[in-house]
Length: 175
Image (cartoon, rainbow, N blue to C red; front, side, top):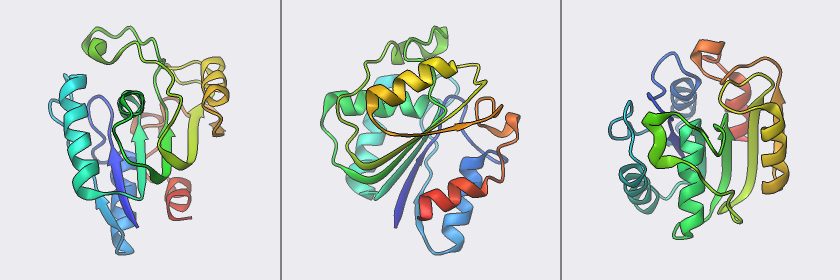
C-alpha cells in the first residue's frame, strides 16, 4: 500500500494526526509519502498543484489522505481532470468552498468536482468545525455522493481539537 498524505495550511507536523498516521503506516512497512508543501504558512494554489501533480506521477499512491486546505487542492486537481485514479481517498475537515481567509485567496472559491478520481471516497467532518458548517458538510457529501462520517464536537479535526493519536483513521486507511 502506498499512501500520500497531504497537509493543509500551516502543515500537520507532530502532534497532528497526519504525522501520527504516517508513523503508524510506516511501522507496518507501508510506503508513505508525507511531503511538506512549499510555503505551508503562505500557500499558493498553482505551486501546490504543480508539486502534488509531480508527487502523484512519481509516487503513484493507492491512497490519498487530505486534511483541510489539501481537500480544496484535491478539488482543483479533479476539476482540471489531469490526474490518475487512486483506490482510496480520505477528505478530512475540508474548509468551506467559499472560504474568505485572505492568505488562502488563490484557492477559493472552488467548484465541487464532478469526479474525484478515486474508487472509494470517505468524507470526514465535524459538527463544530469553524471552517465548514455542518450544513455545508452534509450538502458537500450529497453533491459528491460519498460516504460521510460526522464526528461530534471534533473542531477542525486537528491537534488543537485533540486529534493527535487517532486510531480510527489508521484503521480506515489500512482497511
